[in-house]
Length: 172
Image (cartoon, rainbow, N blue to C red; front, side):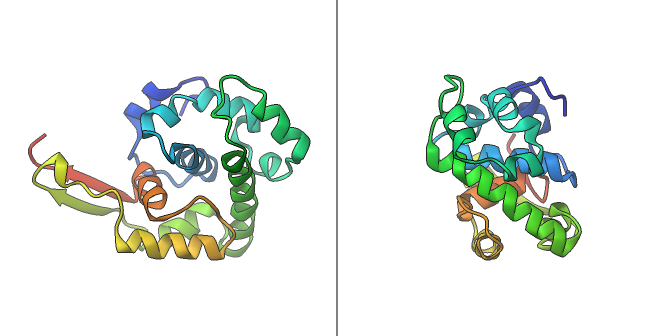
């Protein structure tokens, strides 16, 4: 994934399998900022996320403090929601925790699908789910590990973005 691309990159890359912790953190960050918006609207701010979150360097984001948050809030290109900004920092810290426990964030997440993407088949685009009970279980476990802003819908979209869940729509 090129560091300078924006929403067009996500139109191409959304749903592609990834086991890269940094890319997964980036996709989770888009998911956090997506709450209340469309995925495309949140993904369009990707250059601002990268700029404000040290090119999505997990350790650097985990070390951010209140002064850093104020700097992010002052960027006119950001979605300036302090709760979401703090959530990104908290999620970076949670990723470090799961990396220590599971070897990587990818190992932790891909364990939920036994390392194999789950394919969901639908007749029409209108049937495509935005959440499932399974996503609720994953979100609950993520919260136990310190993640925030990871309800069932965000978690499901994040898992789709990382290629863990893949939709096949027959009428498209």
